[in-house]
Length: 264
Image (cartoon, rainbow, N blue to C red; front, side, top):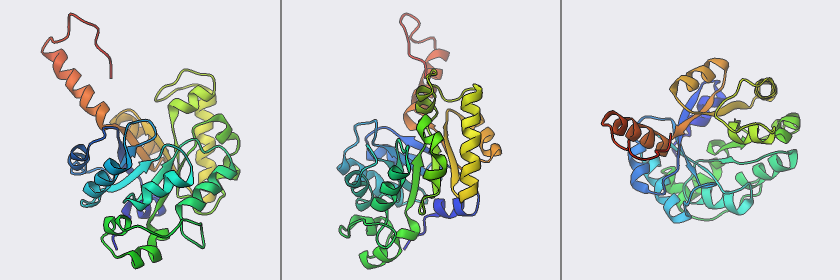
């Protein structure tokens, strides 16, 4: 059975960097899996990615040295099961705000005795290049569980959330966190309330041995956050990369000067 090297890195205290996949297309996933990121996360929560397409993406990604992850539509058992049973190596669960949310995530992600994930399926084992029996025996060791702490309520409940056994990492969604604080959404902010919230989460994460993660807009921000001690770092998305580069080229060629052009 293949080893989840992202989970192993986080346990060793090392940084692991990946990006978001927002385009519902296995070909895009295949190409992005060759780039060299540690992991690729399917953004099922906000994009039109169905289970069949997701399964093909997991297969394409898992065939390389890149780890296939997914952010399901919500932190519920059926959403988590559909991701893991069809080839995902882990989940990044949105809007975890309470200890109960965290306990639900652990229960749905892992098999007994840690959780109550049901046994069945075939593609999960294929994704790890093993047989079902071996997968059922070792899945709890290899599946990565990341909780998104992206609301002011999660900051207030950080101790209760991150002390739940089974959580590998937390992940900060800056846009949602700022919005919940009554501030303008964005990739980053120097607002003291936001800055203090990030520091608090890192401190609590260290206390309970949970790796810290965050979403950033670009390479410079990723390097900065890595130097601050963040380990699980997502850089932009494949769609954002494509559009920003395409826009740069169009601008250099004086295209689109006669109309309003979106900024990426």
